[in-house]
Amino acid sequence: MAELDRYVIVRFALKSALLTFFALIQWRSGFVRTLSLLFTLTAFVDMALALYHKEAPRGAGLGYWDEAAASLLAGLLLGAAWA
Image (cartoon, rainbow, N blue to C red; front, side, top):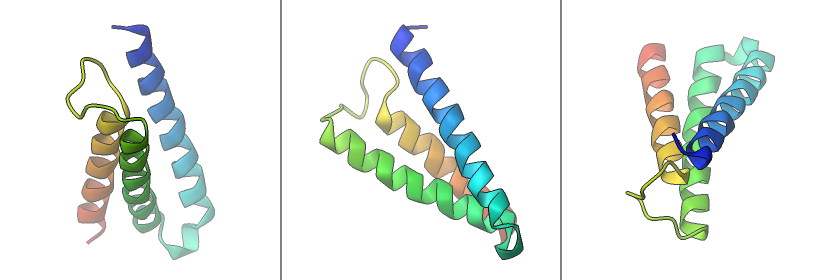
C-alpha cells in the first residue's frame, strides 16, 4: 500500500471520528440522523476538493474522490437505517 493511500485512510478515519463526536453532541436531535447528514455533507465537500485539486476520478491511488464515495455511502446507509 502506497504512503499516500495510508494517508487518505488515516484522514478518512480521523474525519469519521470527528463527525461521530459532533453527532454525539447533537444526541437529542437524533444521533443517526445527524451523523448521516454530516457524512453526506462531507461527501460533497470532498467532491469539491477533488475538483479543486483536479484529481482524476479513477486515479492510481486513493484520493478525494474515493473519500467522497466512502462518505456518501456511509451517509446513505445511515440514512436508510434511520428511516
